[in-house]
Image 1 (cartoon, rainbow, N blue to C red):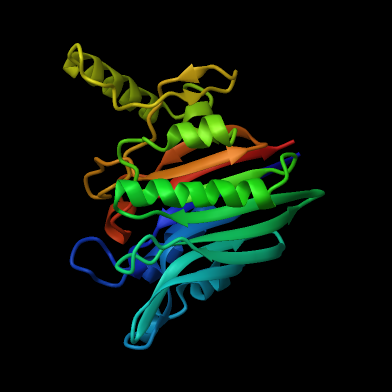
Image 2 (cartoon, rainbow, N blue to C red):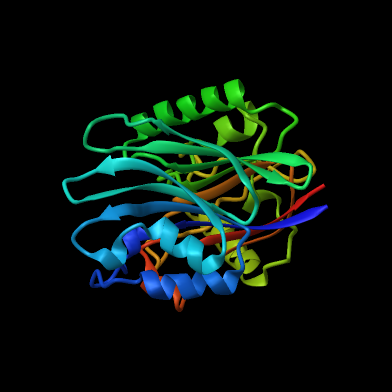
Length: 283
């Protein structure tokens, strides 16, 4: 049995959400305190020829956290580029970046890695989907096709990142077609008391505001017993006052011991997104 601490975080190219000051050094300290085994990072600058302190951010963080790192470059500019990165405490056996850009104004990719955890091969896919709903649907279909082609049903799978899916419309594809579960939907009830209370308040507000004939915007996800349960992902954006539910961690083949979103200091100063943390048990 192995326990993995998984973090998903859009790091906003190493700059704070307010004022745009460099936050990479403080971000390194914050992540170090989390003791992650796997880091799914989005908006990582692999190259910055203007500000050397923001160059090769995946390597900078990996060295500080004593992790291996792979980087998938998606958006290339004259003096910079950025994309997704996976940092791992476990050996990385394979990685490949797949271009899923829907149009030339938004360069997006899937960073697919395979790591070795004891005797198990674990597939890890870092995603950052587009801003247009139609584009996100096409990108998720490309992701689904890749999973069916390259991920055996008996091998554990983690997909994490910035889905930009604030209405949770993509959940049925992950849950029903790919057999995945979102970690907050299957985490034990009552583990994170603050999140449990916030979720109850959110459900009450939804019931009070719903009118007959209006569609519900919360999509059912599968609970740990296989039954559907209405559990929206947590609010992660903007970090200073979280309102939109943009970030997700989906899993298959694990037991979820705990899931939480990190609000407040120092996280609200480090990026425009709040990070997600999940403790997963691999049988």
